[in-house]
Length: 211
Image (cartoon, rainbow, N blue to C red; front, side, top):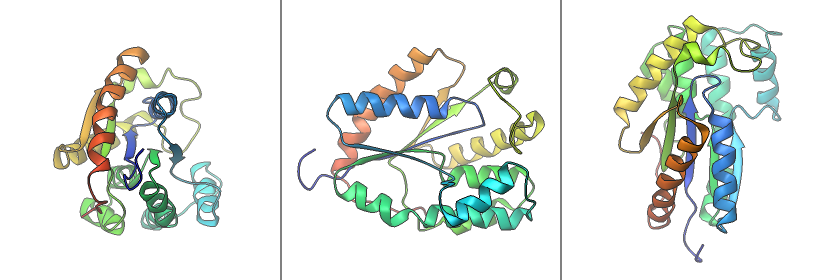
């Protein structure tokens, strides 16, 4: 990275077990091997005070009203915004597993108003690219340890997928739709090819925020 060139903010989104973590880690390895300075993060960040409350909810040890847990997820992202911005401006590319779009998709799938769900994240950093791994949900249930956490129920995941499709339709200029049923290698190649262009473009552009 040249001095003064910022890093790219790349996000992976999709339903549970769609391969986000596997693909985000692989992209991090590929870019690191090319000499790109990388930081990998994921949301929720369960290490913070707010993250601890979210973890208790997700592991079914605490119940919270839908609107309350939604705002906690958003607050968890706001906790990290300055750190992400600092890394990006220093030339580090940040690769994130889940972001604000998961927050909107999961809460809206529970019946909370979609626009209300999006509102708390307005002003957060907008990604340069979102890789949306769209999965055949019937295939996902066969993946390891599926169903252990609160949201991993098939009917609910179908509703989540519908909300992700809605988000994709609104933001297709920087969302990249990927078929999560493809082989790991096919997906890795497709993501790596797009990422090269994203890094080059981001280096020349100022940071923007979610509107």
